Structure formats: structure tokens, C-alpha cells
Image (cartoon, rainbow, N blue to C red; front, side, top):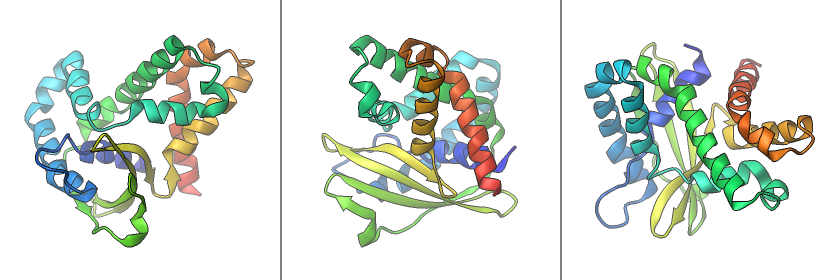
Length: 215
């Protein structure tokens, strides 16, 4: 499995579920639930291998409560294109974006079965504002390789959600934004065509990230 994809897979595993209790810090949410997510995956691994629908549903249940897909989609589109999008187009893009990510990482996710996650303590420089912060993490794979991961998290209605992730210095949100702009240019600003082909754009983005990581 390629290094960047492996790291992104672990990052998905480490994404926090909706935490119980009163207003945990972003670090607490990540640290207290990442192990539980991996345990749930391990307990259902064979079932998920045989039942793709069950796997997709299970992964969506993990991601939906904690990922600000609406915010990510608008950021990827940028103001320039999101203002042109109808409500139907925006919702379709969000759905397509989420589905393509889940499908792309699905098989790789099932193959990852070991590793350690270390959430780093919060520092003053992590807090960008009252409702925006970063959570830094180190992922150690089975062969001892350590990958740095940084989540950008936003507080929406009292709940911290993931808005972006940086893996080994590769800003995934920015990468998708650039690919979206290129796709719009290639399709002569046909938003529907870009949405329909977004799965291919995601694959191309990951390939580009792999190349950048090797440089």
C-alpha cells in the first residue's frame, strides 16, 4: 500500500466520533475515540469484506457526525463557483464528494490492521480562533514509520468537526480545490460535468499527492 494512502486511511480511522459528555476539547475527542473506531473496524472486518453496502454504511456512520462535508465542499468549490451552484447542484456535489472518498479509501481501509496513534498536546499556536483550531497527531505504522497528520477542526453549534487534513505536509483540501478549478476549466465551466466526474478527480488528486510526497 502506498505511503500517503496508508496514512490517509489511518487518519480516517482516527477521526473522532461524536463525543459524549460536556464540551470535550478537540484533542480529547480525537484521543478518546480513535481507539474505539479501530476496534469497531476490527470487529467487523470480515463482514465488511463480504458486504460492501454494510461497510459503506458503517464508514458513513463514523464520518457523517464529525466531518463538515458542507464546509469542505464549499471550500473546494471556492466562492467563485459555489455562488453559481444551485441548491440541487451543491447537495449533489456534497453527496458525490462524500461517496467518492468513501469508495476510494474503502478497500485500503480494510487492509489496514495495525498501527499506533499519538495525539499531541494542544499548544497556543494550534488555536486559530474560538471556533477554529488544529489537532496534531503522529501515526506510527507496523513497520515503524511515523507520519505527521494535522486536522483543522471547527466548532459548529458546540460540536467540533473536521474541516481539513494535512498529511506529511500535503494540504488535502487545497489539493482538491486546485483539482476542482482545473476540472472546471477543462469542462468549460460546466458544473454538472465536473460533479458527474468528481470520482475521477479524487483519484487524480491522490495520485498527484503521492508524487508530491516523493519529491
